[in-house]
Image (cartoon, rainbow, N blue to C red; front, top):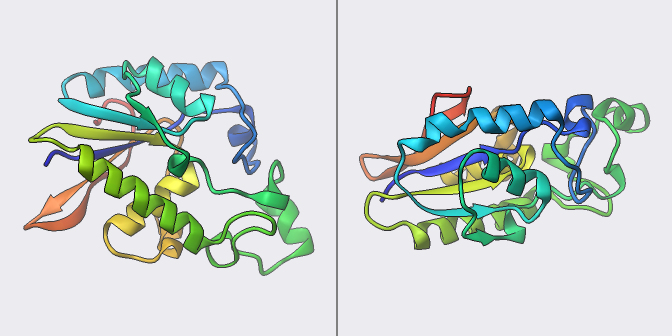
Length: 193
């Protein structure tokens, strides 16, 4: 089996401002489009068998600009549902809930860490189904949900995604070492794919 490549979408207005963005379907900023295009050379040399994307346009557009053809969209790759915290920053949330942690508490009217973990488990299972021979499978999605994906790949609870920072328009790779799931590459800058 090839690697499972994770790509976080390029910058949006809200990601640039630290606002929680799940179901709000924002476009990439001009900088986000440039970031996504810059992924193209690093991905060009890979043998890619399938590309799964979040249905949101920021993810689909990132895939397109990176030179990838989306073969399937999946709601499982959507961002963490922030519910009542959609569109606001962590600083604003902490004004009313100083002890709040996304990774422990989840979001009111949104998802818990366990719910996001279950979605990422399904996305990873689907990626493994699509892996054929040495071809890579690409998952194009969002910051917090892909951090959970990385944690789940190596057998950790969703909350451990807190320790896996992920910048916009970066590439990560999940694979194996000695037949055990491993993080091969994480939060790599443009060109490192």
